[in-house]
Image (tube, rainbow, N blue to C red; front, top):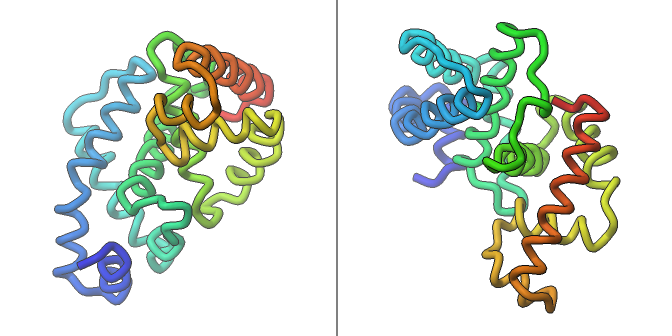
Length: 199
């Protein structure tokens, strides 16, 4: 069963399809929660992890399956990527509730954490607005702050998820130059995101 049929059956209330969805993506969601917590250096008890995991799937049922209905798979975004991004954002919301400020200031550039969060934001924005503010913020403040060539590079890296060697070849630059440009772009986006308090 493909993802769209699976979602359609879940929305229709088919228990077998719902069980299949939980089984298919349960591990992914659990790993996404743990990874996000680790990115922010947070330790959570096993029972809290299980609660976050359970609450994620419970939330998919809220508002007449609103989150599931908003999946469109645009720009090649898979259901797995879509659900993972939502899991990351819900985990960040959980951390915000524990600690008033969870910002990009806490994220290390060296360990690739900002790289990871930026990818989440861009993948998230390929869907209908789950929260209108998120899409507007990303488009108006992050991507539109970039030059045209930087926007193209950002899309190839985070949305298309292309291999660095292929990107470098396509842009007619060396692989070393690619990494220099990527780092400059990330630093620029990080400064914008921090200044605008996007996270």
